[in-house]
Length: 181
Image (tube, one colour):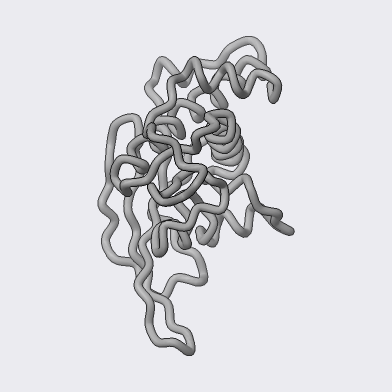
């Protein structure tokens, strides 16, 4: 399932031209301006979607196989996104790789269910509305603004739980999320 990255929400005050990206992590960067009692704030949000090819669009005989393929594809998309964002932001994964794996799995599931990588570590009354608003879509606003990751996916060097790696292999993801399947 893909969501058009330039769709506006009612909370957007201004939408500047989208900068489309292609490849495995296709999507765009969107800048919105919002007004509050503290003045006008500029906010960037990143919409990520997996591109599909015509061969991947072919249907299979089982919807369960389709669902696992989509989740598996989204898992790989979110794994690569997490690695790239950690490197770009100068942050590291948790020293306990099972934390990293579980968070990435949750992001992939939300991407499949909601069309956006909504933070899996929070409680939401309405997940679809939260995903649409984008505040808690990974990387969330607190992470982008202050490098504060509630999920412990992206940790600064001075965090006691930060490891020294910015990568996680597909095999490590499988190993640590096997019980969740």
